Every structure is written in structure tokens, then in C-alpha cells.
Image (cartoon, rainbow, N blue to C red; front, side, top):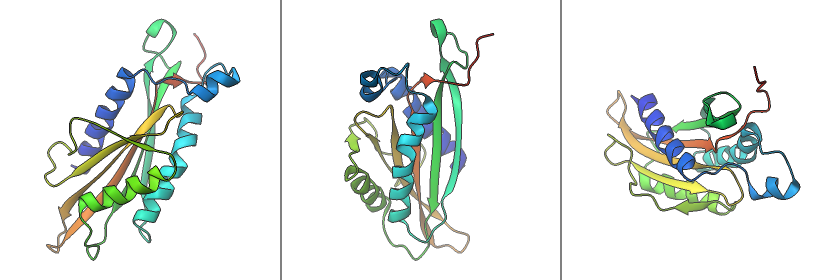
Length: 182
């Protein structure tokens, strides 16, 4: 169930990023690069996200995963010449942590704001199918992609309530340097 929510959040963020045509950072254009790769974009964003997550919920080991998806390319064909990089970091909260979903997301966004990330206005601030959930979307100017930070309560087998904090990082539709035309 948690995986399905993470996938839905990732798909929503992916759709918005594709619609906003975020492909190459201004810095890459100014340097004259032939285009930022999805891997370099993820490498630029992910460390600050992971650092903020660990600082928000210290002493908890994060669950990390990543993948990529084809998003178009030469003549906008669906091929692997352009990819969207995706990464997820989840922290299951300790039952002794009394912070609310809103407090956890706010703490995370404050940490990222100090690193130059900006909160974006979205029509919904909850996860589909998760009551009492909170989600905020952020983008760092000059970076190709963004992050959705979410938290929601869940009941443990013991009956205690705990929080889950998740960050979904998604790059723009960017060059795949490993793609070779057939």
C-alpha cells in the first residue's frame, strides 16, 4: 500500500514536471553544455534531500530506491535518449516521536528552504487515499526537477501511531548520455 502511494505521488510530480518543460538548467545552457543529463541533475539534488531527511528524523535508517523512465527523445519518440530520474527516500518514524505529519513536512521544507529550495503552490496538499497526510512540493531554482515531501500517520501492530516521512525526487526529461542510436 505504501508503495502504491509513493508511485502515485511520483507520477503526479512527473506529470507536472513534464508539463512545465523543465529540461536543462540555466547553468548548463550558460556553460554551453550539450544538455544536462538526468544523472547529473539527480546528483545535484539528491544529497541535500537526503541530508534534510536525516536531520529531520535522526537515528532512523532511510529506505532508498531509484529508477528512471523514458520520456522522449529524438523527434519526441519514446526511446531511451532522454530519461527522467526518480528517487525515493522514506523514513518510518518511531512510535515515540509525537510530531504530526504537518510538523514533519514543515521541518523538512524549512531545512530545504535554507539550502535554496522553494515551496510551490499545488492544488492539493494531501496524498490520495491517505487521511491526515500532508504533502508539499519544492523546486530549487536552476535545477531541473523537484521534490515532493510527504508524511502520513499509520497504525503499528502494537496499536501505536507512527509517522512515515517520504521525499520523492524527480528530474526533468533530460539527456541519457548512455543512449546509442540504433
